Image (cartoon, rainbow, N blue to C red; front, side):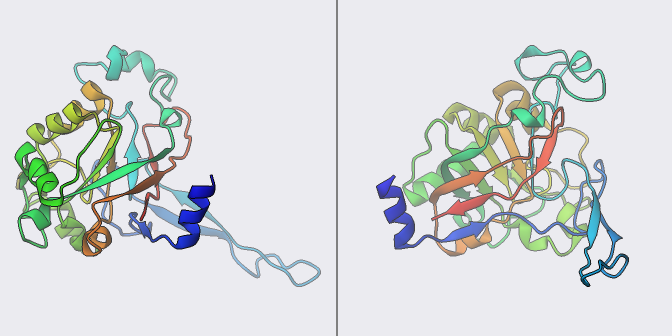
Length: 267
């Protein structure tokens, strides 16, 4: 404990890896968008001492903005991770297994796999598939090893399109992301969680939309690896950070399939 407090006293830098939650932000077409409405405004009710309060109603899907996917999010041939029957698990309107409340808080070593920088570009082209060779190249470039239980964050540079929802969603151009070989590589390394700075984590070819998601199947269903999407990773890249303390605490939404999150990288 003393060593930890000494390290904090010596100074740390915190990188906020989340995108801001606001109406109009990019949202995958198969998820409901984010809405915020003030239900009570200052002045609606004024207390005897002159005080007043305001409060809002927030409506959002579990997979909107920076968020983590629970293992209940994807099934294959009717089965969830571990062979659980998806139809049976979701009966009653919420999941009895692999709900969002089962995602543990994360305080772990994080590793940045900066694929864009490895290719000496600011942003990977739309539809680019991040392969196992690409991820290996990132490790060789930094000299960092990936070990079991780590968190691996993949930077494509695509977050630079965040302020342009049409460009960010890339329905015509495609979106760069991890391909099945890259997903298998991550599973072989035993990562506990992986994330990226895109809307669907995985490679989306031009014009293909979200018709098939093989990487979600490989990670969530087969390997039991959590996925975080819509990350901001540019500040880590600009600071030259490859290793960090990764902190993430999902909301314990009972029976849910995902949760908004605000992940942090502590350096």
